[in-house]
Image (cartoon, rainbow, N blue to C red; front, side, top):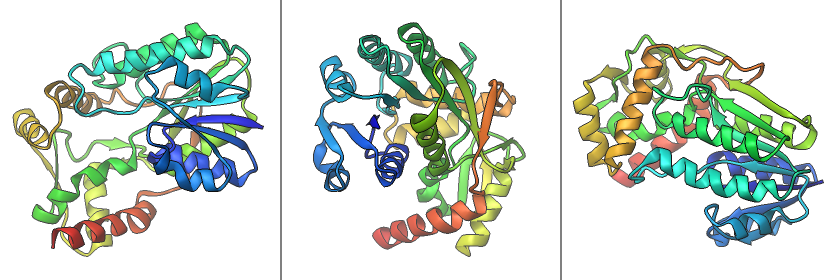
Length: 297
């Protein structure tokens, strides 16, 4: 089976490519920097050099494909986050419309059914609409909050034993590991149905942000706490870390959506991942923490 995958060097894209190659798929990946996908090429993947904002590149990668995985990459420096998503959506929809028989699996997000109040997810709302208009064969995977998001807090975990957020610590989300998202994507690319579908992807437990911090403390062997801060404090920290003003504002709106309980799945059906947060912490966070402290020390 011939399948094309975008973002093959990211958390989800690489895990997905690895799974597909392990199952004997004739795989093509679209990469801006092919050298970063050399491990996939060594295993037999066809690597197309190109950019997801270039229709010609996407069409070259789609040549001969039976199924296609589309993920819009995040750009924390984007001056207008919603326009960023729409620019990628326009390219994807144009290329896909010329390949009507290809089944598309699109990584979206919980909350993408809402047109506003969801921060960067508003962009994915637009992407879903444009892909639906471009093809009759697309499945939108509405993934829940990534467990991997906690890795962005490693600097403050190491320096201050804290995870800072505007979201209250008692708010819960069925957080999901990206490897579990990749597993669902692989299943759908290989055996998915034709037609237009929406599928929620969530983790095995509805875990609070306080419990996330407690679990990290237990696993890392250091005190870790979730600290609720003001919008102004968090925005200042994000700007200092290099996020654009609009991206920072969109993340603040996303946090407000979580606090208000807006980000819970409403799709026609769903898939539950297997990885608990404690397992993720032991298998992923510990390694990342040790690497970070080694570099910092």
